[in-house]
Image (tube, rainbow, N blue to C red; front, side, top):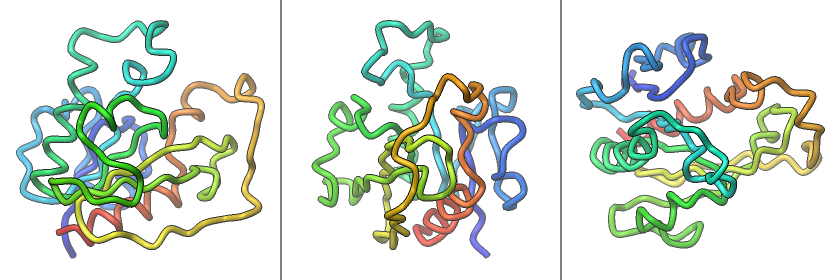
Length: 171
């Protein structure tokens, strides 16, 4: 089975249960040597529509650029918000169109995999285009205030498993 790395994940992550080589804050994703496809979740607050309210750590914004370089080099998938400014800055084209690096942007809703909020996202895949399990009756709204930060940020277990399979197919 192809090994998969999971970068920029929480210490208590579903990716560990899936056998991924996990890099949380303490392990430092920048120490990853590559050599296999990855699932990348770089911090997004400096790339979001409300970035001007963010209080990022020094160098945090550059982590997404680094992650884009690595997913393009080793294959895999990078997840970020649908409206992330990262897409435009890194040269991604419209969803469904391969870019010059062989990557393709795919819009998804994390609620399709059980997230309580719709959480409109895009995944950038450098590898084969995955089948996306669209769910027509998934939640379209929620009161986010009732969700704690860890729940808002955590990738649902079914989505994590799907992203690992997408990354594995990119080997």
